[in-house]
Length: 460
Image (cartoon, rainbow, N blue to C red; front, side, top):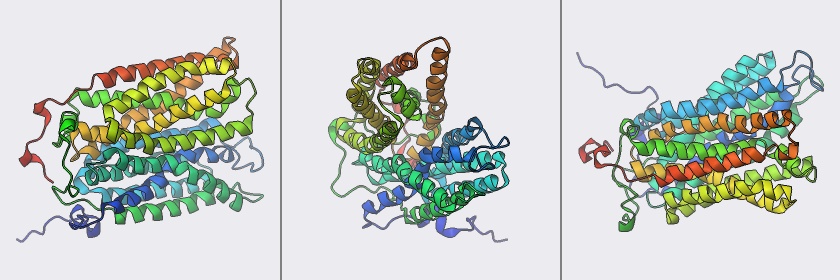
C-alpha cells in the first residue's frame, strides 16, 4: 500500500513555503511584524470599554443587574495571563510549524475573541467575555507576540535590539490606535438602547483579523545559514553573543534562563504597577495640583515614552550590549523610584513627571531588549520558543505589580496614612525590586559548553 506523506490541509501556511529567495529584502519583514503587533497592542487600551460595560443594560447609568467594574476588570487580567500561557506553550509549536501558521492562528484567536465577546455583550453573559477576549483573545495575544519577534531575530543577527524594538514598539503603540478607535466606534454605534460596545467589538475584531492576516501572509523566513552581506560577528562580542544554539528544553535547565526570567519579571513588576495607577497616583501625590484632565495628559505621555523607549533602548543595546543596558535600567530606575516621594513631597512635579517618563521608557525597553538578550545567550534557532516560556514572567508581573500598588495603598489609607503619602512605601519597594534585578543581571554568565547543540543537531 502506498502511503501519502502527512501534510497540512492548508498548504500555503507550511513552513517550507515561506523560505525567502536569496535576494529577498529583509526590510520587508518589520512591516509584517508591525501589522500584527499594532493590533494585539490594543490590549493596553481595553480600559476604554470598562466603564461602558458597567452600564450595558442601564445605558445612561448602571442598572442593578449590570456588571460591576471589579467583574469587568478580570477580562483584561485573563487576557494577560493567557498571553503568557499561550506564548509559553505555543513557542515550541512556533519553531516546528513556522511563523506564518502561528500568526494565522493568532489572527483567528484575537479576532474571534472580539466576536465572541460581542455576543457576550449582546446577551449579557460576562462568561463569554472572559472566554472571548480573556481566554481566546489572550491566546491570540501570546501567539501573535512571539512569532514575528523570533523571525526578526533571524533576519537581523547584526541588529537584534533594533529589530525586536521595531516590532515591540508596535505593541506598545497599539493603544494609541485602539483607544481612539474604540471610543469613536462606541460613539458611532451608541443609541438610546445601546452603549455600542457589542457593535464596536464586531468591527474591531474584523479590522484586526484582516490586518493580522496581511502580516501572516507577508512574513518570510531566511534560507538556512543566511547572513547579511558583508557581516561577520565582532570578535570582541563573542564572549557574550553566541553564534551557536541551545534547544528549548535544554535552555530550561540553565541558571541563565531563570536569571533572565527574574530580570524581566522584576522590571515589569516595577513598571506595570505605576502604569496601571498613573492617573490616580499623580493626582494624589501632587495634593490636587494636577487635576483629572492634566493627569490624562500625563497618562498619554507615559504611553508615548513606553512606546518610544522600546525602540530607543533596544537599539541602544546593540551598541551598549544587552547586559550593560539592563544595568542602566535597574540602577537608574532604582534611583529614580527612590527619589519620587521626595520630589512629590517638595512640590517638584515637573521633575517628578520627567523621572516617571524615564522609568516608563525603560519599562518598555525591557520588553524590547529581552528577546535580543535571549538570542545572545541561547542563539536564534529556538529563540521563539524560549521567549514564549520566558513571557510567563510577564503574566506573573501583570498580577503582582497592580496588586502590590493597589492593596498596599488601600492598607495604608485604612490605617490613617494620607493619600499623598500612601504610595511612598510602594515606590521604595519598587526601587528594591529593581535593585534585586541589578543583582540578577550581575550574575549573568556565558553558558557552559555542555548546553550547546552540535552542528549536526541543528535542523535549519
